[in-house]
Length: 165
Image (cartoon, rainbow, N blue to C red; front, side, top):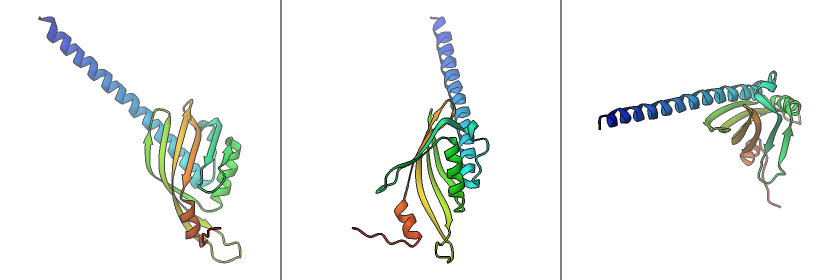
């Protein structure tokens, strides 16, 4: 009988230590992932992808999933660098509106603002789109991103009219 309170106290202390230890591990993992996403978003905002090897896995791939269009992708870090130069030519600004961090996944809800040159020499147009990304991690780096966004609203905001065939 005398050992029961000690066992209960020990069990409670062990449970608290495991809980707090697990929380500390989750907290440091989440902080690491948050910093990873900060660096990744900076690539989108600056067009520069210096140090990408530390952020992205060598097998990195972006998969654009757009309704009504063939899915396209960007494979590899060098292709990513070219993609950043392409999108940054549109004065892209990416804002992460919400992030949910999992063990090996990160889900983002984001908004981008871009300025598009007028092909006919007129004034550039600005537009924004909202989207979502599911990012998978491998070996502590971004392995892939599945991206979808509201392309219809983006095109309408740029002055295009959608017609059915």
